[in-house]
Image (cartoon, rainbow, N blue to C red):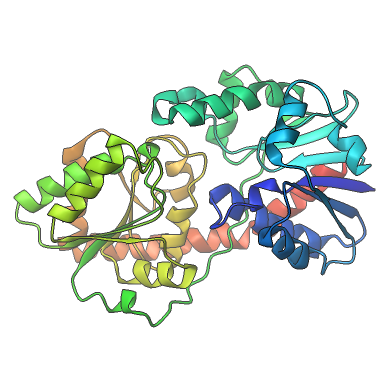
Length: 372
C-alpha cells in the first residue's frame, strides 16, 4: 500500500503547533510501520529546509520523498483554478493524509484524510489579519472538509465544532495528538532569572489573549504584586497597532521581560522556574503548552473555554478569559498559596503522564485509519 502525506507544514521553522503535531506523529508512524510505503510531499523552490526534511525522513526504508520544485505561488494558483496534475495522481498513492489544510487538487476517487485542529478562522475571523482571512478564503478549508473521506479532529471540542459546522459526525474521528515533551532543562542564563515570575510562551497572537494578560498583570501590580512577567515567543502581526502598543507597554514596565523565541531546552528551564504559566486563550483546538508546562512541574492558568478544560482534566486553574479580575486573582493565588500551587503541580504531573502513556493507542488508531 502507498500512502501520501502532505508535509508542507514542516517547511516553516521554527515549527508551529501544527508542525510539532505533524513531525511527532510522522516519526512515530514511520517507526511503527515499516511495511507500508509512505510518500512525503513538499513543494517550492529548493532551499536548506527541503534538504533537512529529506535527510530526516529518508532514513526510514519505506519512505519516498517527493519534492515538486515549482514556486508555491504558481502551484497554489494552478490548483486553485483547477489546473495542474492532481496530487494523488502525482504521488501515485492509494490515499493521502493532510495533517493541515492547504492548497491542493485531488481526483474525485481519491481517499483523503485531513486533520482539523480547529475552526477558529470561522468562529473568530476578527482575530485574524486581513492577509490571514484572505488566505483562508482562497484555500477554503470548509470545502476540503466536506470532500474528505474522513476528518481527524484533535479533540472532542473540535469534533463538536465541526458537527455544528455541518460536517456529518460519521466522518469525524477524534484522535488527539501524540505528546512528546521533555523535561531536559538547559543551564543558560534563562534558568538563572532571580526574580519570581509568571510565564507566557507562545505566538503573540490576538487569539492567545495577550492583551488580557497585560491588563490583568497591571491590576496585579496595582494591588501590590511583586512577581515579574516573562514573555516568550514570536510576534504575529508585528506591524499592527496591536503589537506596537504591546511592545511599548513591555518597554515601559520594568518587571516585564520579553525574551523572544526560545529553544526547547530553554523553554523547559523557564517552565521549571515559573510560579505559573498563562495560557488563557480565547480558543484552542488542543493546547500543547498546557501539557508541556505540567510535565515540567509548573502550574497552569487556562481559560474555561474550548478544548483547554478537556486537555487539563481538572489539573489547572480555570478562569473566564474575558474576566480580568479572575485572571489577576489566579495569579495572586498561585503566588501566595503554596497548598494550591503544590496540589496543581502534582495533579499536572499525573495528567501529563496519562497523556504520554496513552500516546501509543492514538498512534495505532491513526495507523488503522490511514490503512482503511
